[in-house]
Length: 235
Image (cartoon, rainbow, N blue to C red; front, top):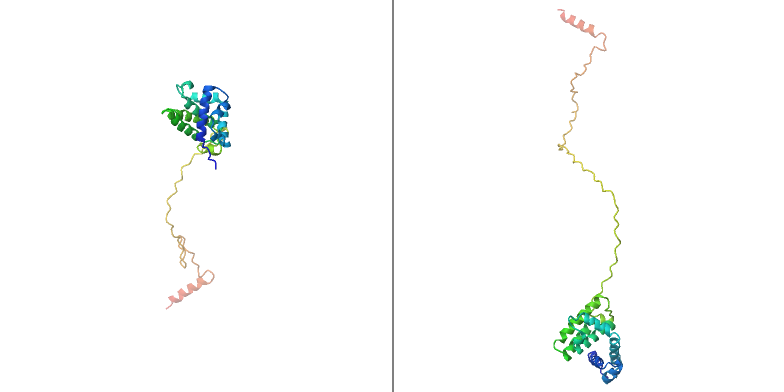
């Protein structure tokens, strides 16, 4: 069973090839063939990744170096350590052209290799510049990742749909009706009992009731009374 070469080793070899390229200025494939070990060339995937890095870095070297310079305060590329500079080139190339590699993996690999092969301060120096480049790429929408490369990427915000403009129409001011004062209702008295006319009692109005004359219908009533009076006078 063939052991799979980890990408840390491939990055270290690519760093060595770039170092030799800076000195010799020869064709990159020719330089790589003299340095790349059989451990990598014997495995197609490892060899493919190594040459993919080289083929992305060299044609875009001016663009990658410009991003390094824009975040290296008071530092010229010529004054930087060659190892630090080439490690940053590898990491920036991975962030730009390798969608399946998470940005923080590229930065951490560069920091660890710098600690191993460069100065004591190289790790902090490389970290500061690469993190600033990562933030710039995110801000400008240049960091396009997919698959495993999305592991440490910030979530994309949904695009805000523009709201239609509010049209203000000059309307007449609303007219308010004056509120009238509430009516004062008189206090309610307790229900008085209705007076009912008792049955069987005569009418008690101011007028006297009309008395019927018993002799009204008797035309002789008057003489009879007189006769009775005369009879009573006799002895």
